[in-house]
Length: 229
Image 1 (cartoon, rainbow, N blue to C red):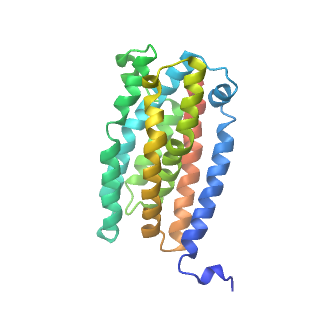
Image 2: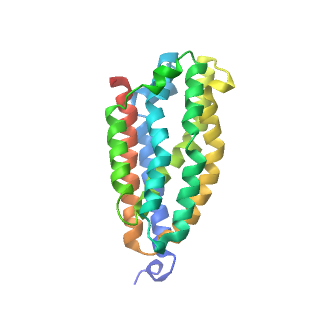
Image 3: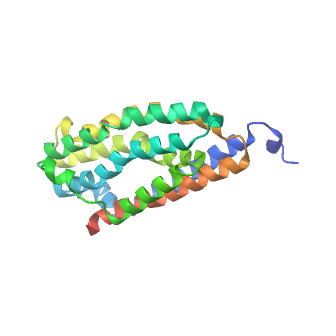
């Protein structure tokens, strides 16, 4: 018998290891996205940054909505998790305004970013999120949160520095990314607490990892499609 399998925390430890591998694969795959590749090559233009902001806005607006939907789908068996989801949605439901402010700070109009449509990847990501959040006890969405909060905590900071340096922008033009590079570390701490509550079996852990893989791919598709709008 595997020694790990007999430990009560074995499903949780295994899930964390698998999520770490999902993240490594995701971060590596991001570098193949043309928009991201240009950023790391020092070839960004203001138009690239404006396009990124336009295409992120809808996802940011809907982020708090699908979290709220997920919380309403949790049964009393996950009461503490529901409270955590609701708190998270409340914290983030106005973040899109920061993103709009960044867009205006780099020469765009508020009306333009507010009226920008979702690209193909954003449509797919949004559809999956609402579909998953509407299922009974959608604990697997912790995998989606792992990817999205990880982007804020691990990617937003380095990207804000690259963007600001290449385009010679003031702090207010990258405020959305700087804010999330700091604030999302707190969300990842909450994520760890949520995982301890949620991962009570190997099946739950497998579902969380599956959701992480799906969202990682759809988020990359969202970035890939920016150049196709």
